[in-house]
Length: 113
Image 1 (cartoon, rainbow, N blue to C red):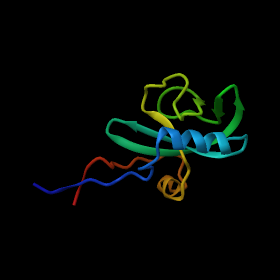
Image 2: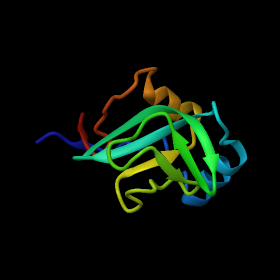
Image 3: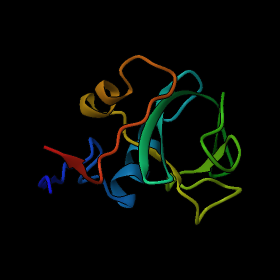
Image 4: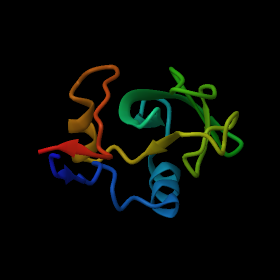
């Protein structure tokens, strides 16, 4: 049986507090953010643009895998806050994982070597 290799995802180390601090400091219309989706054992990242910021919420130009286009500053989706779709900081590693594509999936949980 092949050995399993666990790889850290590009957003490893980001906390709800660090994401909230980044969003509060940077979220404004036209700002680029990244939506993190973790459905079906697949981790995917998707670029999005902030359309509006009001009353503690951020509205994007697109929705993630579940929920709608509105997110709290904590990064949680307003319509599915306990779901598997969150905003993350668009660090160089996370943006590189997006690969310039609108949507992609990579199995970070376990891959064969």
